[in-house]
Image (cartoon, rainbow, N blue to C red; front, side, top):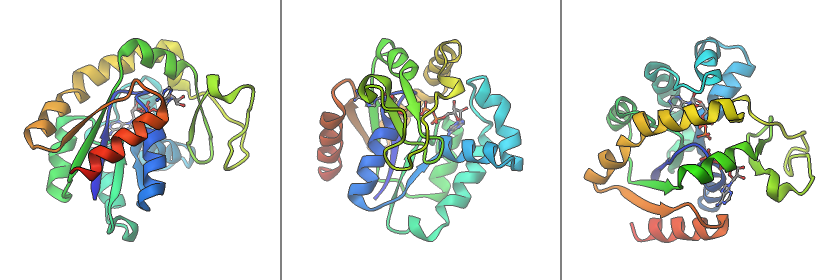
Length: 208
Ligand code: ADP
Ligand code: ADP
């Protein structure tokens, strides 16, 4: 199955995509992780993306569409994939429609107040991108998989978070109706504990 995970920043897309990709044996394609890797490697894409990401703005459509197009051609995408954080604009959704056959769009909904709290408490592994929350880390400072010291993303600092939520409401939320009209949307309540969210997503996907 080719699946999109849609939702505001902090909704739990990365957390859930990682778990469900492991369970289904398909790759997680996170445009945020790919862009951060491009910046770290100082590639041309990274240079184009950096100032937008630092400001909490979306990276221009043509840059993101190009990296997704290339990634979807890889062999490991043949059996299906989860797109985590793409598309984020109607133009990206239209471009994706021309290159991929998407069966399901998992829309993870969480209220803005909860998102602000989650994002300020998010820590990530600088190696694999896995998200953790300060509350659940209980003083632990390293990634369970890589042993790397966890970091706070610059764009999770309070001054950028509210702007990212505004960008979500203006540019990404219209995709909810876009995919509902295509009959692909699965509505998931993301404001419950992570295990309950995973169970709800798996049930919705099985019924699809
Ligand atoms: P997204 O990829 O949608 O931006 P993440 O998966 O990175 O979201 O999660 C954002 C933050 O919220 C992380 O710190 C993560 O550990 C935490 N989180 C994820 N799911 C839940 C949940 N169901 N309840 C509480 N916190 C969560
Ligand atoms: P979050 O987990 O909080 O939703 P991501 O890691 O998915 O954040 O994205 C971080 C940043 O990367 C975004 O604020 C944006 O600048 C850029 N980005 C990621 N995906 C896209 C996309 N599909 N279109 C444009 N910009 C993107």
